Amino acid sequence: MSNSTDKIRCAWAQTDPLLAAYHDAEWGVPERDSRALWEKLMLDGFQAGLSWLTILRKRDAFRKAFKGFVPEKIVKFTEADVERLMQDAGIVRSRSKIEATIGNARAYLAMQAAGEDFSEFIWGMAGGKPIVNRTGSVPVKTPLSEDISAALKKRGFKFVGPVIVYAWMQATGIVDDHAHDCHRHGAKHNPKPQ
Image (tube, rainbow, N blue to C red; front, side, top):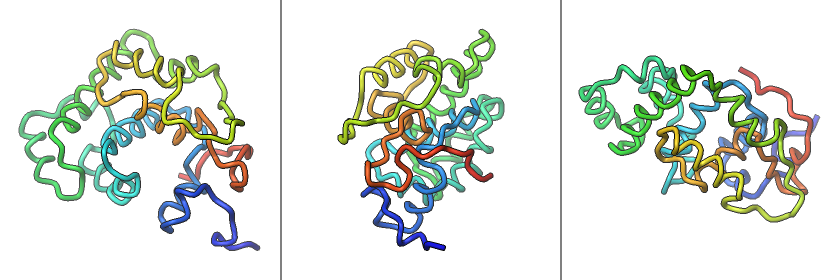
C-alpha cells in the first residue's frame, strides 16, 4: 500500500500535510449538494487576499461560528452576531466578509424561494458535468467563471468575483484542474467521505 507521501500531487498541495489531505479527499471532487456548494463558496469568499491553508486551518471554527453554514440560521444573524463574529479569533474577522455571508444566505434562500435550486443552477451553467482542463495551464478565471459571477451578483451575492468563483469551481469539482501528473487528474470522483 502506498503512503500519501509517495503520491504525485498538484504543486500547491505539496507544502503541508493538511493541504495534501484536503487535495486527496476533497479538492476537485464534484459537489452537488446545494448547501455544501454554498458553504464552500462562502469560505472561498473569506479566502480573498489570504492563503487557502489559512481558511482550511480555520474551517471548523468557521462552521461553528456560522452555525454549520445553514443559510436558514445565518439569515437570522443580527448586528450583535456580527459583533460576536468580529471578536472570534478562530475565523477571519472581516466585517465586509461576515456581512456578505449573511447577505449571501438571503440571496441563496431567495433563489430557493423562486424555485432555483443552487446546485442545479450552478451545474446547469457548467453543462451538468465536470469540465476537465486538458490545456496544461491553470487560469485564474474563465469566461464561465465570469458568467457565474455575474449571475450570482445579479441575484444579490457578494464576494463572488470571477477569480473567487473559479477557485470555488476547482474546489467543488465543477472544473478538474489537477495537474496532468497528479494522481487525481481525470480520476473517477467518488463522493468525499463525511
